[in-house]
Amino acid sequence: MEISYKALAVFNSSHQETYEAPRQGVLSKDATGWFELGSDFISDSIEDLKGFERIWLIYDFHKNKTWKPKVRPPRFSDKKRSVFSTRSPYRPNSIGMSCVKLEKIEGKKVFVSEHDLLDGSLILDIKPYLPYADSFPDAQTGWIKMGQSFEVRFSDEALKKIIWLEKRSRISFKQIVFNQLSFEPQSSKAKRVKKVEGGLFVFSVRTWRFRFRVHGNEVLVQNVYSGYSPDEMSANIDTYADKKLHLDFNSKFIEL
Image (spheres, rainbow, N blue to C red):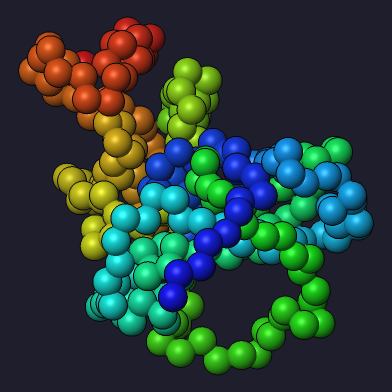
C-alpha cells in the first residue's frame, strides 16, 4: 500500500549537507531556521501555536536514497543496531520527527531554533509539544547508554579563521565542529577524525581541517587550515567549487 502526502512548506536552514546537522536539535542551541506555509494554507491554521515554547515538526528526509535493516549509530554504540531502534534518517519511509523551539510566527512564516533539519526538507505536519504527554524522563533507553560529553572551546586564532570562513560560505563550521566533537571526539568510526603527532587530532569538514587537542573532558580546537595540498590546489579540478576561497584564506592567514 502506498500513501502520499502534500507538503506544507519547505524548510530553510544553513545546514546543507547531512554532516552539518546536529545529531539531535536540542544539542544545537545556535541552529535557526524557518518555513512559510504554501499557497494552499492560510495563517489561521498556525496562529494559535503562539505561546507554545516547542513544537513537533514532521518532515521528509529528502536526501534519503536507501535504507538497511541495521545501521551504525554515530554515538553510544560500537556495533550496528536495528534501524528501528535508532533515529537514523535512512529508513524504509523517509519520515523525520524533531521537537524544535518555536521562536516566533509572522503571518504564514514560522521561525524555530534548536533544530536538526536540512535545508530543503519538506514539512509534512506541525504539532504542539505537550510536556505532560510527550515527556517521560524515567523511560528506559534500551541499548543507548549516555556517554561522557565534552566541552568544545576554540583558540582565538581558530575562532578568527572560522568567523572569516563563515562570512564567505554557507557552512556553519563552528556549529558542525561543536556537534561532532562534543561526544567521542577521538573516535574515527563515525566521523572524519585522524590522530596526528604530539597527541593532536584533525577533524575534516569537506575540504577544511580543524586541529584539536583533548584534555580531560575538554576539546580545544587550536587551528583551522586548508585540506588541499599544493598539487591539488594547482590541479584544474575543483569538485567543491571552493579553491578560490582556499586561495583567499591562505593569502589572508599566510598558510603554507
